[in-house]
Image (cartoon, rainbow, N blue to C red; front, side, top):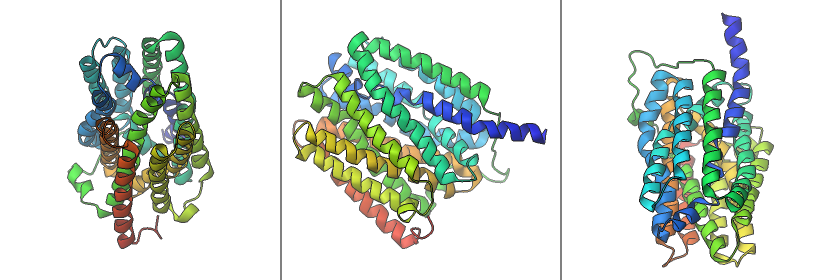
Length: 388
């Protein structure tokens, strides 16, 4: 039995890599088309921004419960079901006849997906003991590969065949990812000690995680702004969906390259220092997006966003995994993604609201800067730069 379990464990990283490669299509392939698609259905600029961000709002509201679920019931089954339900809902995007219907479907999609990402990263950490920095970075790079290929591919599919064909194709592949998770991962159950009550507030009381959560929020707020602002800006300037997709693909290429390079804990001063630097570069990219004319401004911003995201994304996941006890990791990652989702809610929504009054990139830069400043102060007081 022990040898069989060890054999299963050795196969888990490969299955997780395949699942990550397939299952992030719903996030990245729709980036170049979702905001313009909402506008085609009759949504205003502010409504399109909210439709883009409501996925993360629903994900945010569902995250505390999903974390407790993962710590009580294990990872595999909730993750597989989340992927399958998400597949069904993505297929319904193409059936939306109004902005209100698209808003409802996207909100349900966000709820269904609240389990998958925390579960996957907990499993990556648990099965990456030899070099957890590299395990997190490798998984991020695989996601980056999806982000590199799927935005231009999604843009081209939407350009040639229409958005509904794109949504149906993503749904089929997402359903396959759910089956892969169900069949290919061992049935693990990581339960807390009987005397321990798993509650999100217990994790929120851990001060070492607060700087991590703030950096995550600053990163995703600016990223959320970019996912709305860049496609609409380029569309208004006459650039087609394929070109918008190529720019998002360039972002992914830069992020993926950075993630693959960072293989040791001490690179650039440790994980927390890398996260701080990453958010700083993302804030600078937000300023460049508004400050330079097209297409050079968009290109420069995408490069800065890519390097910053490549530094920050694996670092915050590593800090989250190592900042709590094993039986609280599901809840910790769910709360990390609550802050992650909060940024993606407020970022595009703020961009839509600011469209007629104030450059959205400046708003993102201010928020990222404040998050960076507060997180840096908290982390410095705790002395974690020498430890992380």
